[in-house]
Image (tube, rainbow, N blue to C red; front, side):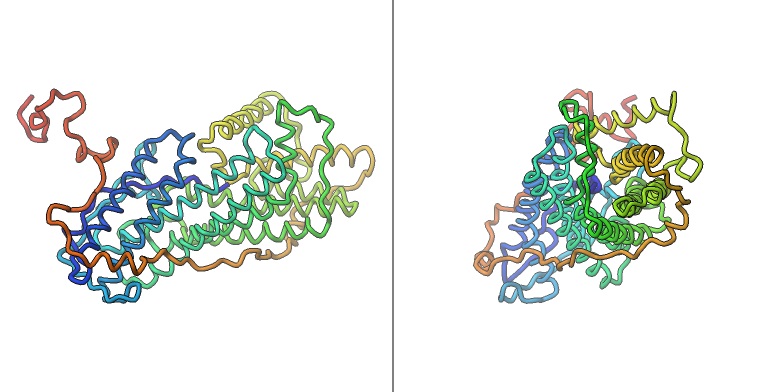
Length: 474
């Protein structure tokens, strides 16, 4: 499942205080107005309950797309570049100062991610473009939620949701790859880990791995079979496992291995850095394990369709090894009894409730869901092998060492940021209204520090000075 990013919020910023343009005097003021709209959209999104945030993502994306052309026009004007066929000059009066919430930086558990004071217009561009990529990933996540929800979708609805999620993830990959290339040309060190080149590259590999796994999900009937088995309203309890053609099962395995390679590269980009949020690092490891476990499962299906049930069971136990499930070795299978069975039942019900609520479901990159499929197939094939085929189950280690190479599916396209229209840019040549400073947004977040709070919590109106640091009120 796509990673559940938290969209960052930002402080107010008035570009006319830092930038001016004699060719297009209205450009800094208009950019300030669109930035204020984006700031309000991010604050509103943050305050919504988790169940309502998915439906609000298009509004955030629209605000981002409206602001980016003006932001990039300011950046091009600082470098003296031509914008929409017009000569644009922007002058820096003083260094830009802005704050963004670093949502990918490691923080104290239970506390909100800290705000970081930043300088330079490049950091503003990096955070805004990163927010677009996060939004695309969250939109893909909301599309996939319809597949795993309690209501079983039709094949048409399932295909449409997967196609939309794949498109969003490829868009997110393009943005992250663009940021990695852009950050690689900068000589100054990043101000925060969220906008560092290794993180941009890691997220580019991560989103490509997620898009590759979704390609497999499109024609994989087993997740739907497991969901049907958990559906309380389903009357088809005499379920027969769907069949997959041999060639396609082997192809799916190679696609999963390609996704695992991308996940491994993403994990290597982050390395052992303690500055990155632990949830992101764990998710990358779970994604790599899930992709390899899924590849083993498809190789097991390929073997079982060839009449090699014993080898298929060995592949399934190899899948458990890849996903880090205990008791997966040959000769170590134990029947789950007593408290262990109760714990497994609790874990399944807890994950089902997460899916129903639409909160932090899928935080393990689908590893729990894949383990359900492997368990279902293993129980069925072991029963068949014990009663009909009676084939020896070989050890899983030699099979894992002989796994094929991965195969790429997607051809990523470069990201083209939205550009300012020539007619709109021409209107910005008009002189600004002296009384108009541009809309910077509403009040600051109530969860931020006291910068946006008119009075301390619980204080009598008009007594803010009595609560200031160093006062002798007490």
